Image (tube, rainbow, N blue to C red; front, side, top):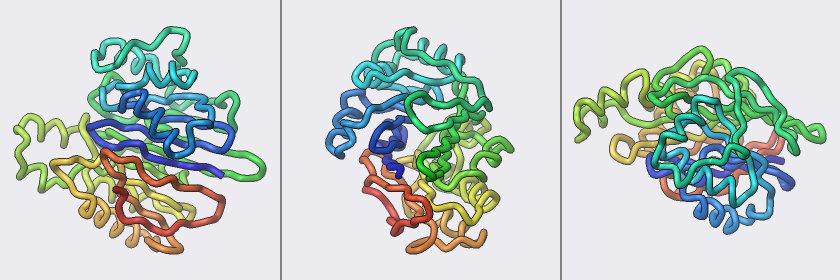
Length: 286
């Protein structure tokens, strides 16, 4: 079985855990490295070897603790050449990642992660960073097969995003802002334009559109990530996604799709992915 946990999801820091009893990966490390280590220990996950830290892009809220996590947990840092170069130029990184700890990925090229049963495919996601990728993760072990996909900090929907989301059973998808809240809110105009632009973030409506277009009967979990503190609420994000899934033919709730709006600054519960099992829906993590 696989375990998933969000350690933080938002502009204050993003980090996600996916693992078994024997090995794990982290996706992004936007919290302090020691905070990530301590959260894992507190949740009885500290003893599981982390085999890789996968980075989506080079913005500080996704990389702040990357080098420290690599050092503390003895794991290499995987991303594209462009993301690694962007991290070198970002002063928000606690310290630079040693050359020996860097691993370089190519978009749309699947690789087998050593010492695990994960196959991982990075794919393009538009954002105003040096580069940005989502990750599609397949797990095959002892007859169990699970498919996981994460898309965060996406300025617009693309065919590449739809392709990988439509394959997955467990989704972490950005639902950053409510358009009306953003446009009527206190952000300066240039920042509103940036958030709504092709290098910005997916709105609740765009996330809902993606879910409606890609839903299939195998979908078990949908986690809404990177919610804005100023321009969204968990209720608005949840309602938009729930309506979209229902229109697509899904049952949302007990016995159906687990839909969760991830908390920005608090770890989620640990979710267990077990083959055909479906989980009790939790509306919001807090």
